[in-house]
Image (cartoon, rainbow, N blue to C red; front, side):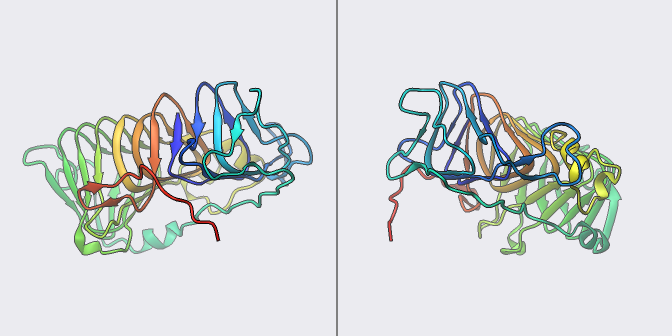
Amino acid sequence: ANITNSDVFVNGYIDLNGASKIGTQSQPVDVKVANFQCPAGNNPGPTYPEVCSSGEPISMAYSTYIYGDVCATGQTSTGPRPGGNILPGDGGTGLQPGCVAPPVSTPTYDKAAQVSAVEVTGSASSNAYVCNSWPFDREWPENLQLNGDVDIGGSCNIKVYGNTYITGDLDIGGASTITVDDSVGTDRPVVIVDGKITIGGSADMVANSQGTGIHFISFESTASCGSNCTSLSGNELKNTQDYETVDVGGAVNLAGMIFQSYWGKITLDGSGNLGSAIGQTVDMQGAGTVTFGTALSSGTTTWTITSYQRIFD
């Protein structure tokens, strides 16, 4: 799995296996790893997470690479390969000795405010909102709530006009298309889900003519507060970090779209274009290359950066 066209911010650690890469020789990226992953173990206690006083936050297999400017708290090794696996690339600096990376707060969202703003409520299986019969064109109005599991497949075409709240799971696959309507302007719609978000097949998501995509958030967790948690730390946060709540696979075209696992793990096991991946754990698998960038889409055209020139002040 390869990450291109994106800076990488990690509060805990990076573990690269197989032939995975972050950045490329011609397009190095900024990588910051804060090493906030202690105390160790399954029951770390109420102070978790805090910065580790020992140990290195980046581990790499022999055939893996990071290209770019790398600031990782406590990191001294550049990898097992002679000459190192953490390399500067064209214009980068490689591993910065003694650099301390501050933790980065993940984006927060007021779920309760969106739920209280709901104006239209419907069943998740209603033909008015999912494609149970032809013609396969549907509209999701602003401030919509769908009760139950939403399954969008086949050649279903959904046009989104604003925020949506789903009380169950969201599964988008087949050759379905999700489009943000031009009336939304630059106000990014947020689709919040109490359950799991699964994206696969050859699903296509299209930003509007102003490049505005959708922010998908799964609030599911293993904590006692379930999908209604407002804050987690200590053992509860540790125990829900590896719980998969977002799975994005297949050769999907999701340029400009943001996917967030609020309390758990987001898994990327395909390839294609994606705006941003946010989670307590981000797990990239397979042989796909994911090109990140929330500004790489405008209407039906997807833009991919193939080269750039870094300007030094």
